[in-house]
Amino acid sequence: MKLWIDGTIVDLDEARISPLDRGITVGDGVFETLRVYRGVPFAWRRHYERLIASAEALGLAVPDSDTLRAAADDVVGANGLDDGRLRITISGGEGPPGSSRAGATPRAWITAWPFTPWDGAADVVIAPWTRNERSATAGLKTISYAANVRALAFAEQRGAGEALFANTSGNLCEATGSNVFVVHRGVLRTPPLTAGCLAGVTRGLMLELAHHIGVDAREADVGMAEVATADEAFLSSTTREAQPIAQVDGQPLAHAPGPITERLTDAFRALVARNLDP
Image (cartoon, rainbow, N blue to C red; front, side, top):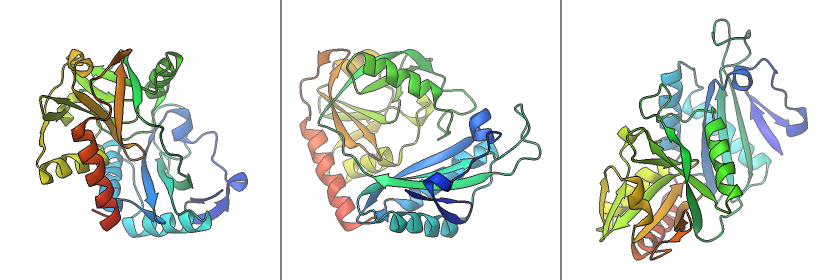
């Protein structure tokens, strides 16, 4: 694998990140993951805008869009990828021990590797931990992923592929690496950003596509008990697109995929076919 670090393409075995980098020592950093379709990073504008929003919220500097896009294209080309996934990481850079960022200079790197499709519908479980929708990093795409790693391990230990978080109000927030949509009586709902969830790029596109194809779609609070009683539900993310949910804590949903999930999947794939930067 070849990657880009601060302006240079290098082989993976030549890449070096300091053990004093703040991304390692205190999780100070942000990132974006993009799908690569036909050799092109999908929805570049939306992902870059979210990267900027996350970085600004943490006080991190980010290279300009043209610089990062050229680097992304170089990485995709250097790895010969037609269908893949690409990650942009911005860390706080090397600095002294402790939480202070004084004297540290942010670093940026880009990696890419072949895409592995998700298998069929997903079984999910409810995580025993909550998201704090009022935390300093709520809604930001940070590299502080320990809570997600722990919750996903909890799910995998129970034979599931994803874990869902409630927020402190007891409503659905998000999954460890995806947003969640549920359907009751023909109405599609996903938690609002005030619930503490990430403003997923695919989430936003799904909402736009739903309105375009005539699906009644709403950003509204969803009680945790409502997930298991949904007529259908799906996870959305850059790599999953729209992945149906088959079971919630072992309880099967009525449809997986359901008709609305199928319509949105078709609409999303048609979008990808006609426009790689919607």
